[in-house]
Length: 104
Image (cartoon, rainbow, N blue to C red):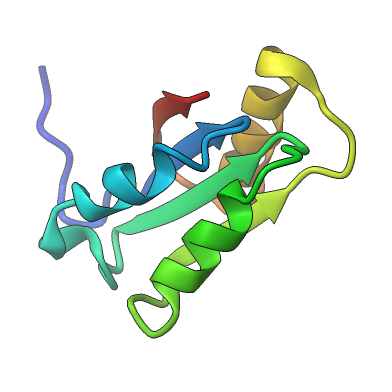
């Protein structure tokens, strides 16, 4: 197994649906070295939740980091569709790897 070099870019995807009770706890568990890292980007992908998942994440992240994107899908894509939206961002932005954490 080859260990990635220091230029290895990773997209960390938090795939969410109706996760307002979980999102804050998950964000607080992300290691400090990930925030504002040039090699990591966090994508919170909310699958058209009717709850406050995206809003809670947005409020927590104000001033915390620049390497975070919150994407709220307009129409529920289902589990696989939300994953596809994350993979699309990873490919478009040239990431070398993707990590998924599912919340619902």
